Length: 142
Image (cartoon, rainbow, N blue to C red; front, side, top):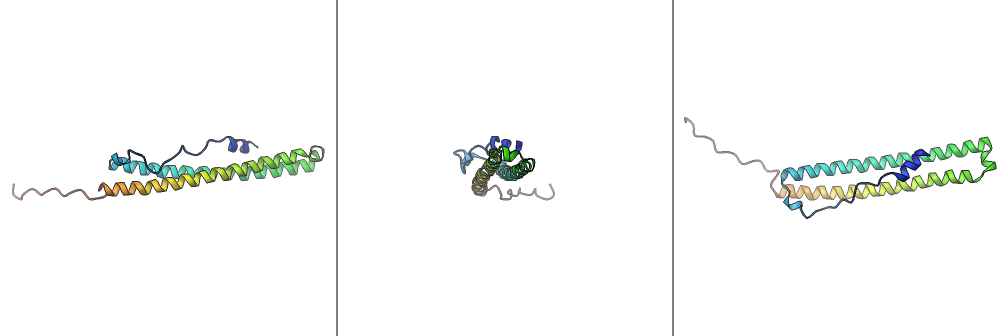
């Protein structure tokens, strides 16, 4: 049941991410590249949180099943029938929370991917991917 509590009380995904910011046009090539790298990290973090939420929900479901089965075998469930319902509700809450976290993660990933596309356009538009201009060669013999 600890996994259920951790899942329910866990922090939400990254703070709100926007596709563009007013200062994007002022970034130089290095800042654009760094921000694109940050978007990769945001995507990785969102994927990790979604995976953790799914694992926690599965663990909570298994724990609920084991708890109900144990209560059945020991006869506790017959004396206190509400315990089984409580275990099932906790498992259901964990699954719902996992779905919320996965939906948030998908939204974050979509926004980060769109931002990366915008950054790629800025990078290209500023000529960041162009080869540096060749330096004139010194005359021979001097």
